[in-house]
Length: 489
Length: 139
Image (cartoon, rainbow over all chains, first blue to last red; front, side, top):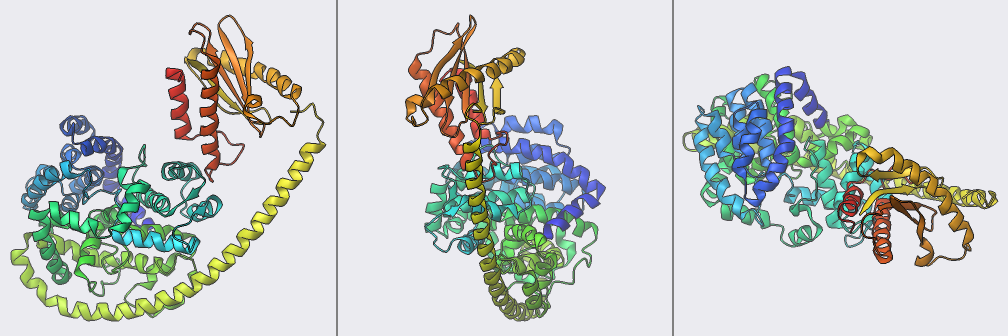
C-alpha cells in the first residue's frame, strides 16, 4: 500500500511525474555510471553524458556520487526542482551528494552537502568494502533481520535451502512480472541449483524490494549482494554501523548524535527548517535503508511537500523511541520506518505488496497510533508476512505526517545548533506516545504471528496437494508419450 | 566460430535461436529446421538405452559448402543445433563437444530457475551472454 501511495504520489502530480520521468533514465544510466563510480573512475566522464539528459542540473553532480545513491539523487534532484526547497534539501542530504546540492546552490543546505561531498569522495575509494550510506544494494541490519524472518517462515532451518517452487510462490506474491522475477532469480541463485540459501534468498529479496521501489535491476549481482559477502556480513551485523562511522567520521559521527537529537526533538520541528541541509547528515546515518524508503520517501516527500505537510495521514503519534531508528527511517523516506524501530524503509515496500495481495489495509491501519485496531486487522490479513508488514506498512503511512516532521527535522538537524533547542520540547510527549504504541504494536505482532502460522500451515498443505497433482500429471504425460507411435520423436 | 545456435524443444519448436550475422538469419532458421530431420534420424538409430555423453553428442549432421551443422540431444529430447562456418579452420570435434557441454550446462541453469516454465522461450540473460561468447570467440 505504501507502494501504491508512492506511485500515486508520483503520478498524481504531473510535475513530479515529469521529473520522475527524466530521472528514471538517468537512474539507469546512473547505475552504469555508478558501477564505474564504484570503481572510482570516470566519474567526471559520466556527468557530462548525463547532463544533457538530466533535466535537473544536479544530475551530473549526482553522477559523481556514489553508485545507487546517485540514482536516488537524480530522482531527488529532479524532484527537488519541482518541489519546495526543503524537500530537495532532504533528498540531497539523503544522497549525500555534495555536488548535487551544490548545483541547487542557493540553499543553505548545500554547505552541508559540500561536506558530504567531500566525505563521499573519500568514501568512494573506500567503497570497495565499506558501506556507501546510500548504496541501495547494501542490506541494512533491519532489512537483514526481516529477510531472515521471512526465510524462517519458509524454511525453519537457516542453513538449509528454500526450494525453487517454494521460493517461486513466495516471490510471486511480490507482484513483479515473471520475467523480472526470473531475472532476479538468475542474479541471486549464483550456484544455479534451483534452491536459495539464506544469503541468496536475502539477495533476491533485496532485489525485489529495490525493483518494487523503482530501481532498475542491475546487469550483474552487486558485490554487496554476493552470497559470500552476505555470509560474512551476517557474521558482522554491526559492520555497517562501524564502517559508516569510520569513514564518515567528520560527518557521520557528528551528525549521528546530532541526528539522534534531531529526530527525537525535531519530530515536531517546524517545517520552516526544511531548507536545512540536514539531509546530508541523515544519509550518512543509514546507508542501505534507502532503497525502498527512499523511493517511497521521494514520492511521499513530494506529495507531502506539495500538500504542505498535509494531514494526509493522522498526525504522527510519536517519534520512535529509538532515535537511531528514526534517523534511519527518516533517511529512507522519512515516511516509513520512522515510527517503527524494526522495519527499515525497505521492509514496508515488500510488505506493501505482500499486503496488497492479501489485505491492503492491515498494515496501514495497524501501526497507526490506534494500536487497538491492529490486532483485528492482523487477523484479517493473516498473511504470513503480516507480522512484519503491519509494523512496516502503517509506519510508512503514518510516517507521512511523521515524515514531514522528520523532514522538518532533517533540515534543522543538519543545521543542528540552533534547531535543536526548539526540538527538545516536543520530545517528551512523543516518547510517551511511542511507548504506548509499542505495546500495542507488540500485541498486534503476536496476533499476527499466530495468524501467520495458521496460514503458513494451510499454505504448506496446499503446496503438498499441488505437488501431488503435478506428479500425477507427469505420470500421465509419461504414459501418453509411451503410447505415442515411435516415429514421432 | 558458431554462426548460429538453436535450442529446439522436444516437440520440435524452437526455444531459443540466435545467429550472426543478422542478414542470414532466415537461412539459418531454415537450416536448423531441416537439420531436425537428421537429428531424428540419428536418435532413432540409436538404442533407447544409450545415455552416455557420446550419444548426447550427435556429431556432424551434414555439411554444406558454406557451413557445417552439428547436433546434440539431451535426455529429455531437447536438441541443440549449432551451425559453424566452414571457412573457419575446422573446429576440432572436441571443441564442438565442449561448446555443446557449455550449452547444456547453461540450459540446465535456465531450467533450474523456478520461474522458467519448460516449453517457454528462453530469455535468460546469462544464457544469452554465454551464447554470445560462443559466437564471438568460437570458444
